[in-house]
Length: 311
Ligand SMILES: [Zn+2]
Image 1 (cartoon, protein in one colour):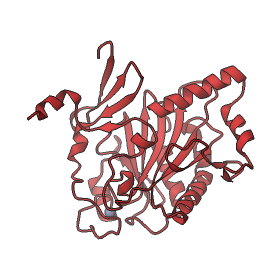
Image 2 (image 1 turned 180 degrees about the horizontal axis):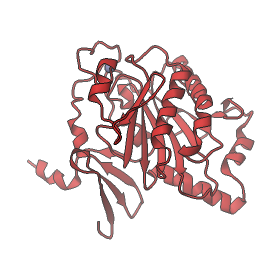
Image 3 (image 1 turned 45 degrees about the vertical axis):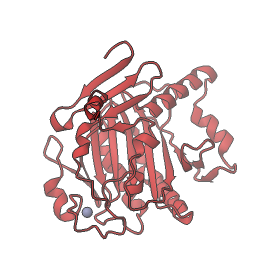
Image 4 (image 1 turned 90 degrees about the horizontal axis):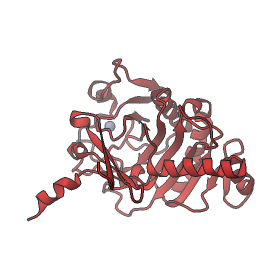
């Protein structure tokens, strides 16, 4: 750390990574050199034809080859299984495998709800800034073919979360109103209102990516999410159907939450999805939910190591 750049180490051994912040712009990134060891050089093809590549998320291997929580357990909700990420880039980073099948033709809302409940069970009580995320298919940055979510909790919010939370709180201080209330007044029944009443889903007016859809929850942090998992999952299933109707299969999703330990100052959790329209369906994209939704890149190489590549 110096006066211009802030560097913070987290984790140890193979699970070590860094948070970095440019103090001029407040832009943030995370550097996780050991994610380069994931043995994902062989592209996994979405048609399942790469089944000869050993997959640790398959039912016959998941219970023997994935990590466990400190009490020796994994969280099982319905068909979903939640466990710590093998290559974390967050203080708490969990993976929830949604289905036993690789890239199933459809993913029922009930399975999405079970996966969300698994994420909530793993992250509730953490106190930190939580997000639940989903990269679907390699072209959206997924390294595994089973639909799976990634939950994170950190002491500080990601770049996009910090903007959303800080500006929501400033809006509330200035106007005395919750931003979600004002937004629903503007958007309900309008051309961008897709469906939903209690939990409305809108095409976002200023999209962060192709066909961005947002759901605005009436709650703030992960500890309050459980009662909303069913309705949120039904909406996510409808958005996935919308994307397929439009010819898109790959997508990214992030559900942004406030830290439970903080007082309520007006932010409300929201879930955002974007379609990914890369033509290279068989290639694994190098931008995923952190780059596209949180606006905080995951980088593999330490800047201090770059000079070593000079010829
Ligand atoms: Zn598998």
